[in-house]
Amino acid sequence: MSRFWIDKISGLNPYVPGEQPASDTLIKLNTNEHALPPTDAVLTAVRDITGDQLRRYPDPTAARLRSAIAVVESVSPEQVFVGNGSDEVLAHLWFAFLKGRRVQTLDTTYGFYPVWAALYDADLIEVPVLDDFSVDLDALKNAAAAILLANPNAPTGRALTRDTIAALADSNRDRLVVIDEAYFGFGAETAVPLVADHDNLIVTRSLSKSHALAGMRVGYAVAQADLIEGLNRVKDSFNSYPLDAIAQAAATAAIEDHHRLAEASQSVRDVREAMGASLEALGFEVLPSQANFIFTQHNTLAGRQIFDALRARDILVRRWDKPRIENWLRISVGTMAQAEQLLVVMREIVSTGTG
Ligand SMILES: *Cc1c(COP(=O)(O)O)cnc(C)c1O
Image (spheres, rainbow, N blue to C red):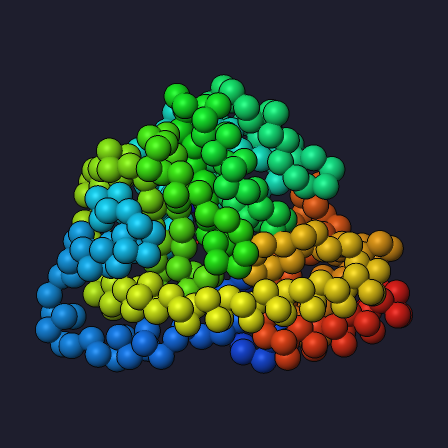
């Protein structure tokens, strides 16, 4: 705290990301990074960067990347906005469309939403999820405010179908509906095809999880061109070059290599199903997940106890001290070998009952 801080800064309660330990001896299943590295095409694109590309400013409009995204999403480049991670895309989206407004989200969802709501003086309404962590759709029908949902939801992994999102956007034609698809690529349906006939819908994506590029920081939004133009106005009032030359090249290669991506995602789904079934056999309740993590609680042991016991054995997962979910753990889907190591340790913890 410094006496030069403005009041707003003193009052902030910033987002705390999952731990990024310096040691790589840990089994790191806490921040939903992809289990596998990006494809060779991506690594080649990074290696092929020239000194001249680094000497110059990057393309402020990221035209090549936006065209590549437009091709795979079947939209026009004017319907695509890119940013430094989808967190930046979302931050600009809050500034452009949600600042000072009433925004409905869920009480169990991405922990960054309340941070942006406070930063941008929005009135956040947190609709409780139902007991099985599914979305109370009636509460969102004819909402009193803009709607922001992560789909699949974090940290539950549950997903809404495209038809459900369409019904939501239809019954809220005069409210902005924001769908955060950070976990697209692991089984859920996307709302992107609905953008063509919904001028109130904006879909955000991340390359951090599906494309194994968390270290590169690239995200995007797809919406009708006038919404995208609003985001560009914010971006160009903040930082004209949010994506450096390396990130643009890597992300373009990753987007163009989407066939390889499908294989990598299939392997995540296979490990997810195997890990879920094995945990259930050990007395865990496992929510159905369409993401690259599972959300689970044990039927007798406390979440804190399991979290600490895993940590003591160098396995890092994520847990929140929030009343509704304090007994739950979010475990990223790693490689099959990591899942097997996790299960060996879980078996020990469950059989001793103490860890
Ligand atoms: C990881 C995540 C993000 C942020 O993704 P980045 O592209 O890495 O900034 C946004 N929303 C949700 C729900 C996430 O889990």
